Image 1 (spheres, rainbow, N blue to C red):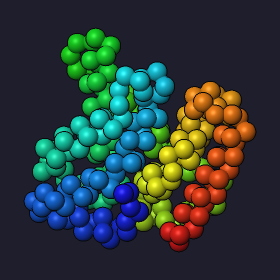
Image 2: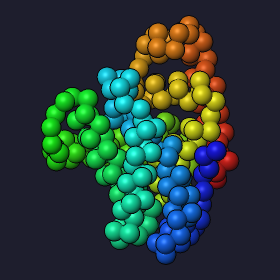
Image 3: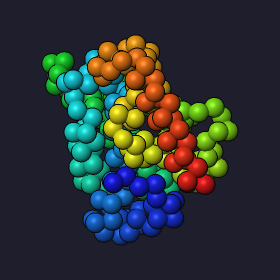
Image 4: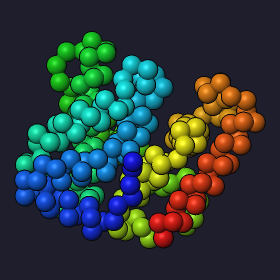
Length: 206
């Protein structure tokens, strides 16, 4: 289950992880699974989603984060999330290199992926609603994109899928209808219900 934890709890886990608590490090990373999976999906696009699984990418990212956490010297969630995005970019570059048949590490590709993930993160930060309609005061305490990704992960699968396809992959309703094998009317009804449910979840965080 994906939670929307307080910043104090997140900072506590980070402090204990830096003191060598492996269990707390695992719990800390899990809080960013939904966020990283959504970023990976947005960055891969439909062209690579059939070839590279976002969940596998995130798992590899977590393994590398475990191995390299002793070298992390940052403080705070924003810096930690940026560090995780860098690791995710490296993992994406490695898998893309495998599928494209390229040889050797491509630092330029990694940098492009980092920049793309940063843009996707900012897109998540902006949310799905008009400015001022989401709990923006939360953003000063928690990364808004992380909060949104965790809220989306708590929605029913069909709700989440329609919202992601519509707002982050920017598909039209007819395109979503074709992809999901549902009528356009059905997709539009799911979209309306999903937005209402998400607004309700946002209200519960205030």
